[in-house]
Length: 472
Image (cartoon, rainbow, N blue to C red; front, side, top):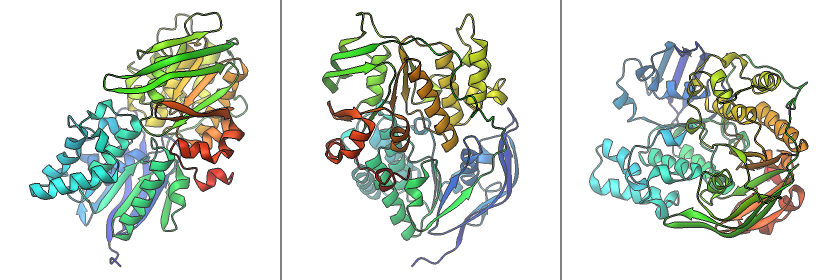
């Protein structure tokens, strides 16, 4: 048994960003070697800010108002250069796309090992080991920015873990992983704690980590105001019904990778459809094709034979937001804004206090909600396509999202959500489409699909116990 010692410590720690004065309320924290801490709290409460403080990114790379102190293995982060801190602690960013620096996946893993100055033979051995551990062999020569969100997350986990730091700070490490990869990662984290690694995971998908008997939990209070829209949970100006959209003989993919051939789906107005599959199976590419943003062969059209017209919420909100304020973003290119709808969106999605804030300064969950708001302000004709809509959302906002999608469906919209969040899908989707490489393995009602274990096996997915037992 590894002797316990204090690895991470924070005393009267708080932080305020200079742009809006929000950040992390005062907190005290202590983590021993071999402990796994799960940090939870409302979306926007400061979990990512706390993670940055624990790794020295704050105060070294952020210029806000940090008060209190953080120690990593007895070294005060204010007085210790960042390169020295990085020898002891590793961090997975909430948005893994913003962490990649190399031109191939294999080089991404090697980059951190080279910076540690390890012998070449050891670098190669670790690189091979973690490529195999995270099943990245077929992706090793791909550019990180061409990978799916879940594949990027696995890659960056491999790159961070290959350095074998004494402390791991993981910001939403499960958010983009399918259930099989998420379950495997949790097992790996448990092994690391048994070997003495200290792990702090900021996570909304709490059930995975809560299942570990040794997990410790801390709830961060929020310094931000949250509206309570429960009495008005549906958009006040829904769109008219749209009938059906037919996908026939769809073929799509990339130059060296064909994802689907002869894919056929019929989508009906009035239903919420959850598309579920392994990381990299093609969920995002399918949504992009439906939105007209990715080339395809075959047809995507409505009942009268005209092309379909959907609004798409991207998996990575950074690709979708570019205006100077949240107000400008939501109302962008809306010549005659629907003022009641705008007011409802600000309240329902807890965005009112950010009207004058640049959207890219918000938390990942808040950015996703801005992206949803701008989508709905444009009244998409046939419906909405939501790529990982619950990413970064706490239970409260996951519920609000569910009510919003239900309101859109009841108004006749087609709502399609590509998601790894089985708890949300089981609670809010009418229909489940299960994907395996190149094909649909199951398509049916929520209750039928969740009872069909053979279909999930064909898709290569496990159903966590709290989902199958109905405790989600």
